[in-house]
Length: 487
Ligand code: FB9
Image (cartoon, rainbow, N blue to C red):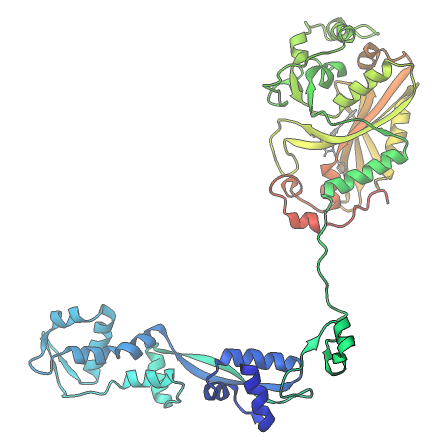
């Protein structure tokens, strides 16, 4: 509609001086005209210069008086021509705002006498304010003093009117050529292609965003760590069993039954199924004995070991529970050296804070072989962590119920400019290994760390809730960089 009008008008006229007048003259909505001009300008059918004009528009109050008359006008006509009207009476006839302003203005214009009885002082009045407001509404230009007065009464407000003057453009045509995007068989057969305009290829067009799956940063780091373990000749342990018995999670690791980690406010015990179905009875007997009275050179813990306690089911607190199962199974066969690793969820009934949730992913590595020493452990830790980009390590003696000696591992983090605790390690106690049936000279060195800590540091995530759980912003999952570990 507007397009034909504009292109048609320019066919016979040099220019459209003012899009506003043009729209008014052709009964078109100026906004439509502006949109068409912008589009025609984009395709160079026309050359549009924007013109600005300061105009005045009525405020909401201005619109009210343009419709109903100015307050003073309404007040004057509410006063009977003869005899006047009691002030209260008059007040009831008008809204509080109109009455208040009306009184002031009508008095100022000496139109009425504002006593207890309100009466007219003149026969007839012109509601000039209303007329002026209507003129402005109609886009007419009025005298500056009147503008100032109406503006002063907040009945009008300034507005910049944007329009265009339009001339023919370099690719002007009385009608917009239909640009076709594709050359079709029909066009070739009909020969229509000869007088068709083909749309230019926009080689900068972004194209449809290809949606696809995105790996969570935790899974990217997990993948890199798996690659590192596999490259170091480790086998992955099956970790799909979140529910474990206290026996494999604690007792098999020679962790005493009254150890604080075993009480409810550190461990999630299950209401159902509350107890495990079966355990290797002969092995259980040996674990009971080593806890109660030792053996294998150990004097044990000297307490009454409870089978019921060992039977309790829980959410595993560490993947070391998987290591105990795997080492026990290994001991049931002729001994062969093994390198095992696990990376999966563990659950701890701990206070949640910036770096701790009630669950995290534990990474664990262990090497089971004859005559291994602490030196071998330190050696493999240097090998493992150097592949994570952490070459400078320091070790601090530590304590775990299932390893002796034990060491906390620290790495110097260039970025933080300080030593960061990057894990824990140790040599599994004979009280753990020998009851399983592993040969005397077999030693098992092992270490553990979390998956969340390195991921938070590598991806600059400050609060663990932004990394894991229902508060994670999916945007992060979609646009996080590849994991540079081990590459
Ligand atoms: O992950 C930890 N720190 C860490 C690891 C890597 C890292 O990489 C950065 C890119 C540079 C940064 C930090 N930690 C272990 C150390 C601390 O964060 C510690 O405060 C929290 N620990 C968790 C347990 O919290 C209760 C991290 C988790 C942890 C601790 C110990 C083990 C596993 C996970 C273990 C073990 C073990 C020991 C002996 C034998 C077998 C397993």
